[in-house]
Image 1: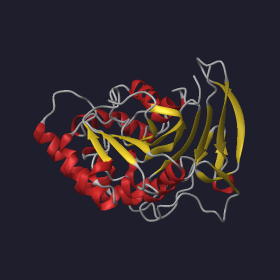
Image 2 (image 1 turned 60 degrees about the vertical axis):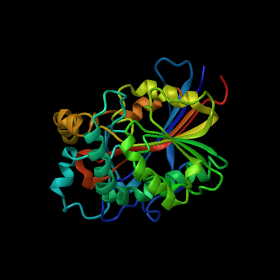
Image 3 (image 1 turned 135 degrees about the vertical axis):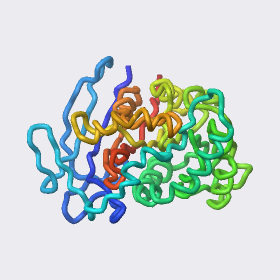
Image 4 (image 1 turned 45 degrees about the vertical axis):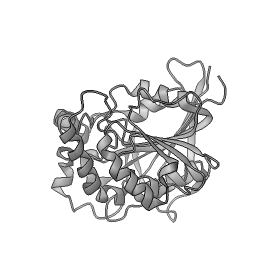
Length: 327
């Protein structure tokens, strides 16, 4: 039975004013697979359904955090007085999920074209806010711990906004699985701008639950803003493990549910039906981080953070999950 090592990092909130993670001058840092993080305390917990004991590491935010029982209060960086109501109600707009159409159901051509156009035109602000997180994540996953990865799969590539964060495109063969074929023109344009020529980018129509690739065929799988709209997340994660080579990396970034009992979680629950209708199946209240932790990867290194200005779309997780090195 696999022993899954889980490391969870709770980070401070991000805002559009100062899209940074933590202030190195105020905390003691250690070097980890995802870069510099505060020193952590290790606690052991037995994962339901597994025979092993998994390590769950959670950061102590020292003087930046006040703890009462199990409740943690995160420091918010930047000016939080500015609240953009349209962004807060951004659930009524395309959320930016690059696989919001991640179902091979009967496609609506006009809707697909509108969604592709909207994602190409409306995601600039989101990308700017998440740019530091993506740059560090992709640098560590594909340029550090994942150095040498040549065969990469990106599920729900959408308009290909992630290519500019790849540390290098030299020698990379990229396969993209995307259900919405209207995304292709934008994806190829952005790929060319990033320096990835057409011969090294293969676009396939498909979904995360049925990846049209052979077993053990890729070094890394990239998925950002995908699992919010996938109908069957556990099945999609099994498919990711299937196509990864032993020790391969699953690189993820997802918006997720806020903590239970919070006002944000209540708002997510109330607005979720409207979000699913407008944003092609995107869920506001999925606990994707917990699902990834339970998927029996060999190791999961995950960080949790909040993009404050996105309000009910603000809670996020990002990280690297390592496929089993042996059966």
